[in-house]
Figure (cartoon, rainbow, N blue to C red):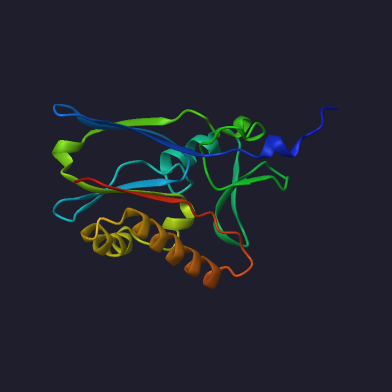
Length: 190
């Protein structure tokens, strides 16, 4: 009998940004796989989410895994998760990742979603990338309120650290025994 390795149940997500910034060509191309989020804050302080989250809250994604035999349930509390029928794994809360070899038979795919935006049309001021641990407790509006004062000081490192610290404090308050998945990057455009 083949043995299941723990690595077969350990995948990863990806959010890759390609920025093209020149005198005549300002674009961003996003390759997205999983539940990290990228938001754009415009010159008018409006917020736009630039990618789709591949979670069970997305009806199209949820339908695909159900059609492949996935059972959808919570683990007592927390997000909906994907399970094999009558088994206690994989327990994924995402519908796209790479490396979850056991989950591909349930419709978890490793095909990224690609989107392209013209940064000039968007009047980009700030880009904020964060993993699910950032956006679990911080709304887009809250993140904008955190980063704007740092934008005025041209301190993207300070903005990054403040978001990370705020998300971590909220995570520890709400889930003192949990492990926080918090990665964040802030990019200012001038």
